[in-house]
Length: 187
Image (cartoon, rainbow, N blue to C red; front, side, top):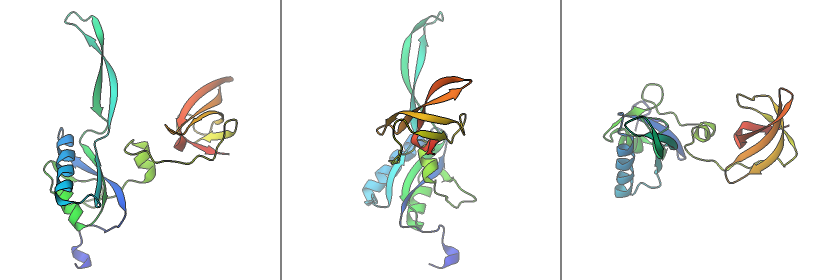
């Protein structure tokens, strides 16, 4: 294919891309893509399809406005978007772009731009296994808001959830905070 007729910059690495969908079609698009991947044996090209959700607790009220309990509710973190880990080439671009409910890839014009590893982790799409060269008792700098540039002492490290508990000095008081590994850096 000539360079001028290429739809996308081809890659051999599977990266995360975001597609915009009609509102309410996120799960249908994800299911249709997964079915198409299985039917066409494209598992090595389109590796994963996700609609990130969160579980919230909502209070339940009766007709009189009295609280009767609580229930768990799943809600989409990014309504109108589906995240796809794929090897980008003209064929995979065409398959995804022509799936019913997809309005296009996120990126300038119609050119898909992959998410960075930091964006993937921050958006909760995929947890990257990070190695942390920090031990309990060491000092670290917080690199994310609202505690950016605070220095804290490591109190606990949880590699499973990739969270770290620190003690920082806030208004002259020692205050415990819990952050993701990506939100701190070793001094």
